[in-house]
Length: 592
Ligand code: SER
Image (cartoon, rainbow, N blue to C red; front, side, top):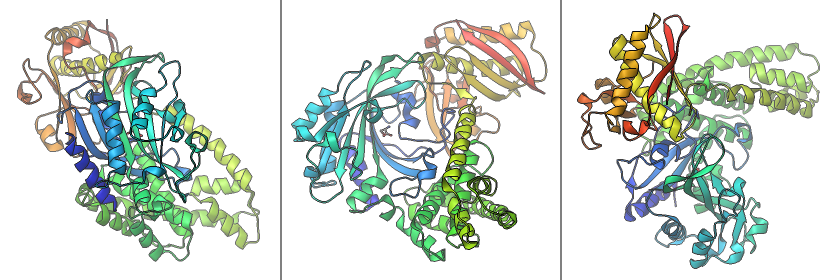
């Protein structure tokens, strides 16, 4: 069974059970600063998990592009990769554990669907803690379907809990499904053997019923949701009977291309190049370009790692675009944006590849000048010129030198600890979390931006924002200090709109359409082709008839927001107004 069969069957199965198919969202989360990339299917759906009405209804199914780079240095073994596809079905306050588990079981084992051998299945459920009880309900449903007691493991938060995506927000216990990929039916007792890598986790059903608060409490969510995630790469490996995800059709054509360009074989390097260039191709298609900051930096790192591991394989010429061509060809039927942005992908990859090759050449010269190479020097070469350990080791060996790997690793760890600290402080913009308090201030922020334009003129643009549960902050282009009258007028307008209890509506539309409507967007932000837009007012506007022309405010935004401005539930007050840079002013405000 091919990956495409799995995607198709998955959508078909859940369509039969009343789900609406929704497209994969962009890898660049819309207006969400808590993560750089979409890391799971739940991410683009957070506003709906919190209770907003989704245009597709209460049952959704999709496959979602996702990227996780936390383990980038582990890529190349048999299980790690950065870009992956996640199949998911969603209940937004609709069905619960019973249907969710039964459907998963039917899809995994039904002859018409994946037809997996039930004797090789095992599941885990949440063992319970102070915040949430032991999930006997899920265990009981699994038993009713024929899963034996021994094949049900009760595990803690580390294994059987998902979310929230940031510090606060929707989360809950999950139940995970595992398939035995060794010989025979696998060990009888799953509790004792669940760590064995031959048990491959194939699906995760999250029962999202809690809303984690900033103070660490878990309160019930407004609605109980189900969020399931099946990693397509792993499932394909299972269905094709392959030992690793890299042996599946989702990677093989890319690896074959790399091998045809390489002068020597090295499995780990080949996999790194394949994974990284596949990820880079998808990332560029979603509008990111290489740079030294945030998303652009991660993209740059992926391309550069690919180039240097390519060099290690003996590929001396620019080659990223050739690999990208295979990725585009192989995935365009599912992700047409790849072909649409082919030119951009080719341009960016070729440029970055060539630029980095020059750095590498300089690094080689530097290497020639170095005497005995120790672990620290090896790390300097890695850090400044991007030399992989293997390259330095090989070059040193050719000179008859041995390099101390432990020392290299120590330097590496020191550096990682440092870069973790700096990246933790990097994302100061946007929403701190998705708590109700922050959400109320987020909607207030939209009202304030419009009020700024009403009072100061339509040329005033947002230049930054930061919203926590306690206060909002907006940076905007304006040259002068505001007068008390201006500030009072802004407060009056915002409070008037809160008092009018206007509907807040989310719509999805092409970027061009949103621009045509004059939707506000932040200067310098990148947006995908299909964007989410929030409009506030007029009274009587609905999802079906949003009446954009009469809206008070309309902005490019991924949410979350309240549904009616009345839910802001208080009086808006400006607490501070100051200059932050030439021509940029900042307002801080609260709702009391
Ligand atoms: N959010 C869960 C996961 O990523 C289920 O989709 O595993």
